[in-house]
Amino acid sequence: MLHFEVDVDPSRFGFPVEALLWSEVAPTALGEVTRALSRHGAVAFAAVTTGRTSVLAMIQCRDPGGLYDYPTVELAALPGIGRMETALVQRRAKRAGPPHLPATARRPERFDRPRAGGRDQGALMALMP
Image 1 (cartoon, rainbow, N blue to C red):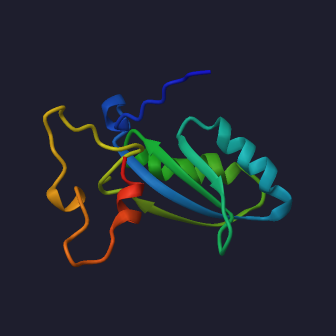
Image 2 (cartoon, rainbow, N blue to C red; image 1 turned 30 degrees about the vertical axis):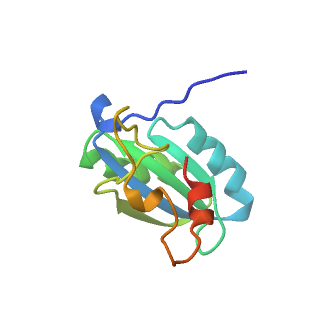
């Protein structure tokens, strides 16, 4: 089965405010919270994590007011969420997938071959598309 995935800047659809949200969720409420996140329109991505927090979500909002409302209204209604931290995404250097280069573009020479007399860069070159 073939499918296509497109990653477009959310500001083009009226959602210029992006933030990462880390939440401490009680283990007994983890299933309910993650199911709710999967249904929330503001959530672009969510994952269960290890460490001090148990859930990470990328949220996209229309304005700073939406960023305030999401944790204080939507998430506040869910049981088991203790502490939350947010971090505004100021700029993304790269979205999912490699940037598309024009057909005439050429990679910088340093990626074409290993340096003469230097370390073998074969491992780096193997990772490059």
